[in-house]
Picture 1 (tube, rainbow, N blue to C red):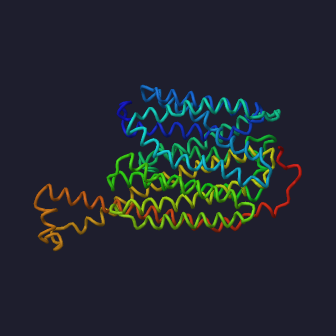
Picture 2: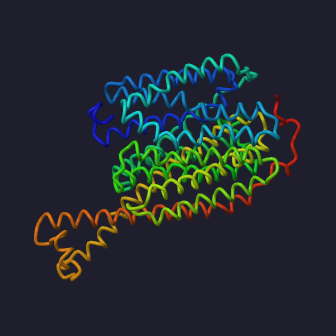
Picture 3: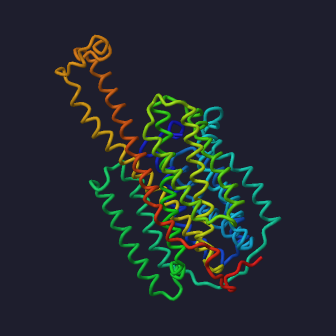
Length: 471
């Protein structure tokens, strides 16, 4: 894509940034739009708009066109995840929410995992444009399916809280820009990052004050009166960090340090999706008989274990080890998402469910953004630190470098020998930096475990008839 659009590495990041920012900003509007126009109309327009925008992205000829079309794709795509989740929860009785969330979660969690494999295959054998074009026939089929099957919801007269929307949009947008641009401009050493952080903090403060004092705020504060919802959004933030940050680390590890081509790297990531699907199917069948908190603890434990195992990875690690580790990590994520969704929304009133699912998805996306930014920052900083420390031993006074075999490879008397030694030091420093990132994520998964104990069992909570799900 960078070559086709004639852009620099810095400029091409806007293709990702534009989608993330627009989706994050418009996701909280899902609740209002559903109440005002109806879920059927909104979902059909969202899918159709996303499909058209995907086709336009594939046909883009300049960076400016690509950024504009990705912005449109994010605007229409923002409602897809929370709307689909809310529709499923409204369509099934409460006792079947676990099974419904298991089926729904397969698409949401496996999509980002299988995406690199499919994208690598399309890019390798066709063209990067087919990564977008492949959405068009699928989107058309979904639109006709929604028209035929989906029923319309009741409309409600609501005033749109423009001030709340504006402040929340500014807070999310500025924070997202800070995360996406921070690594490129050296974080708070840049005036740009300081301004974006200040805007995000000020906008969030104004949004919270406004929400607490306005009679019809953009986000209903009653949502946060639900204990399970408060704990659930905190946990999904952590799940978002683990889900995307681990993939963001493993993909360049396979390509740069292990020398795997794009397609092979994608295939190595595939078993994560298999583990996730199997775990979700198991959870869907057992949710009514097993405490969902047990699944959450098991999921966090498996995720932490797989990440801890990755701290022992070297470029010589076998493909079999990578595949088994991916399956274990996929199982961990599969045991997390479905029980967490079920418990989080178990006691949320039906009238607030669309808003709740929007915030749930927003926190997961923010967690992913924070996770990727932090691990990439730590990767670069730790690589530099370890390079400096290891370089202390690359001295002519070190007798190990004068051994006959070593001297032939890294001859300090020649420019080529010194360059080869520096490249090896850089490689070893990067391996250690990856290990530190994996260790940090493993500790994070364990540290989140006590939050699970704060959740209440859905079956143990009294169900208000007014909040019962309408068939």
